[in-house]
Image 1: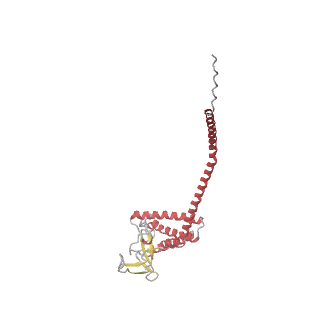
Image 2 (image 1 turned 60 degrees about the vertical axis):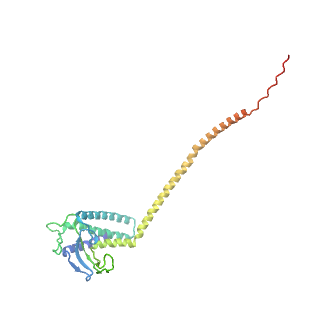
Image 3 (image 1 turned 135 degrees about the horizontal axis):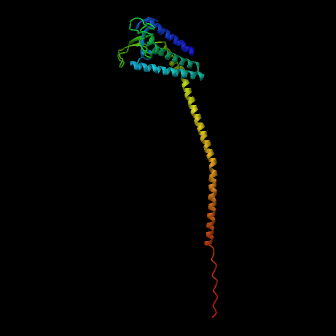
Length: 271
């Protein structure tokens, strides 16, 4: 995977440096007639010429890219240690290579190149007067342009009716292409990786629940075996007290119902 990352980085940076130092800004070189061109542009932001405004936006995007690359390196190492499939590893390696390629532009191109003005001459590498921007404020070089077909939307179409359109309008670079191929490959061919991961997590949760349930059952069993020892003593004591009370009540009952001795006859007195 490391070899693949370095190959993509080499191709990406070699083409960008050649375009930056050999083409004027806005210049075009046909590759495949009129539908495949090298068209030199630069952008301040994201892939395919998208951008976010201001120096703070540019700095935020550059920092976000660095964090994303750090996460990708960590996750790719995790996948390698987990013996993931080669296709999945390749997809993440392509994403990583593309992200690093655009970070190099943002971080260093402003320091090592002069400004590329629109049809204003070629940029120079390591100019004596210094670069055109500071660290993390460089522009990303784009050059691959494929305007495959163009036309006008039908008049009856809401909102865009009658408007001119072109496909494919964005200008991109090898790093953008690498990221796109990696993402599409994961979505099309490796979606089961994420579903399998969710199933594994669910199994772990079920196993943890079973362990907790077993622990609660054992605790309940232990409580059940120890509790009768106390309750039996209490029952025995209660039975003893009950028997004493019963004996006392029987004695009282017998005393109450014992027959009285008949009165002895009084002897007649002699007169």
